[in-house]
Image 1 (spheres, rainbow, N blue to C red):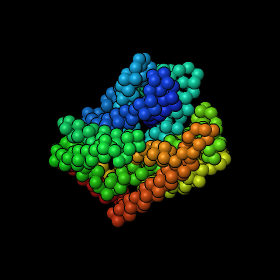
Image 2 (cartoon, rainbow, N blue to C red):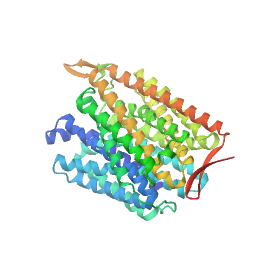
Image 3 (spheres, rainbow, N blue to C red):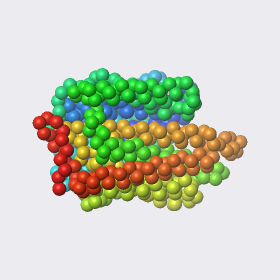
Image 4 (tube, rainbow, N blue to C red):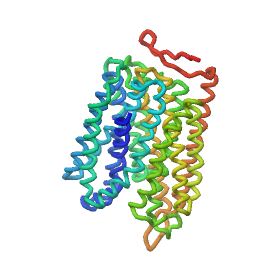
Length: 472
C-alpha cells in the first residue's frame, strides 16, 4: 500500500510540476503564453486517452504489468524533459508523463484485489487522496527546485522519483490474480481517443479560440458524433473497452456523474488559490506573498486529504460510501461558498482550504468504493479508469471556466490589467453549485441503495457473465 500510494503522489506531481515553470520556459524558448500552455494540455490529453486503455489492459493481462509499463513511460518522459533541446521535445516529454495517469485507478484496483477485506476501504481512501496531495505540493516543490537550480532540475528530480517508484513496484507489488483475458478492442480505443481529444481540446482551448469560434464548435460537435458512434460500437462488441452496460447501472452512473462535478468543486481552489496568494494586495483580494510562501500555504490542503482519508474510510465502513460522498460534497459546497466570499485573512483562507481538503478526501475515498462495489471484480481497473477520466473532464471544465472569467473581468493595478475579484467569485460560485449538485446525486445514490433493501451490492461471476446479487 505504501508503494502504490507513493506511485499515486508521484503521478499527480507530474501534472502540476510544470505550472511554475511556464514563465521561464516561455522566456527561454521565446514562446507565447498560449503556446506554453500546451505543456499542460498535452499531458491532460495523453492522460485522458491512456487511463481507460491502461485500465482495460490491466483487467486483461495483469494490473501490475500495465502499472510497470505506465511508470516506465513516465520515467522516459521525465528523462526526455530533463535533456529537452526544443519545445517539441518538451511536448513529447509531457505527453509521456501524462501516459501514467492510469496508475492511480490501477493501484486502487490492485489494493482491492490484494488487501484483506477489512483494509480495502482504508487503502482505497488513502490511495485516492494521493491525487490531492500531489496536486497541492507539486507546484510549490517545482517552484523551489527551479528557483534554486533550473527548470531542467525539476525534470531530473521527476526522473529519479519515477525510477524509484518503478523499481519499488517491480520489487514489492504482487500481480493481481484476477483478470479477464480476451481481445483488446483497438477500434474502441481509437474511437474513444478521438472523441476525448476533440472534447478536451474544445474545453481547454475554447477560451483562447473563442467559445463561438468555428474550431471550438466543430470540436464539440465532432466529439458528440464520434462518442455516439463509439458508444454504439461498445454495446455491440464482445469485449468492449468500456462496459457501458455496467457503467449505466444506477449507482455507477450517478457516482460517475458526481465525480465530474466533484472535479469542478475541487479544482477551483487548486487553480485560483495560488493566484490569490501571489496577487498584489492592491487588487483587494490578493495577499502579495512569494511563490515559496504560497506553496507553504497550500501544503496543509494536501496533508489534510492524506490524514483525513482513514477517517473517511471509517465513515464508509459504518454508514456506507454513499453517505461519505454526500457529506463530502456538502462540505465542499460550504468551502467553495466561503471561497466566493474571498477571505481577507491568511489564517482564514488556510482554514477554508483545510475544510475543502476534508470534503475532497471524503468524496475521493467514497467514489472508488461505490464503483468497485457495483462492477464485476474483473472490471475494477477499467471502471476506476473511467471514473478517473470523468474527474479529469471536471477539472478541465473548471480550468476553462476559471480562465474565461479571469480574462473577461479585469482591473488596472499599477498601470497593468489584472484579474478582478469578480472572476474569482464567479468561478467559486460555479464550483459551489457543482458541489451542491454532486450532493444531490449522492442523495440519489442513497435512495437507489435503500430501495434495494439497504443492502450492499456484491458482484459475482456466474457462468462468465456479470450478475449483481443483493446480499444482506
